[in-house]
Image 1: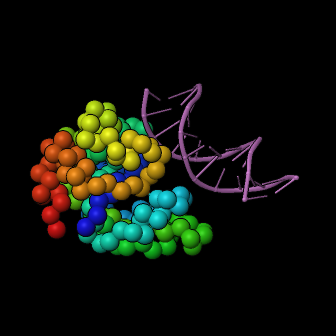
Image 2: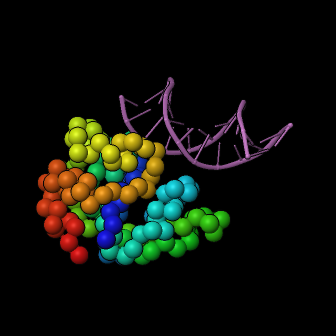
Length: 145
DNA sequence: GCCAACGTTGGC
DNA sequence: GCCAACGTTGGC
């Protein structure tokens, strides 16, 4: 299993809206960046991800699960753009802010810190577990299949 | 609201 | 195929 981070501006698409989709989930459409798309192509059903609010909040607010592998983005005219489907799994009780991440030396290599503009990014298992802990989650629970 | 960083586009 | 110009993202 691999771990990821999905970034969204909360006023465009928030974790609240994602949760409202329930088990059916929602396609992560609108990505028009090759790097981000390529990461989505690597995703497998069952992969876990963070839901990160950019601009407003700037924090990891939820855990999501990939429920469908990459397929054409229904909002794109060009078939080259693809996306996965994700569903909300659980809240992060204590959202982990960008400042929190930057203040933690063990997270200094996170893509979030080093390439802030990438909207879909990989997260290592260690990073994932640590951010879960910082957010008040039992990593075992968030990472268990 | 500003601007740095980055990706993409298009002229040559 | 280079690179200047431009648009977008996202932190501050």
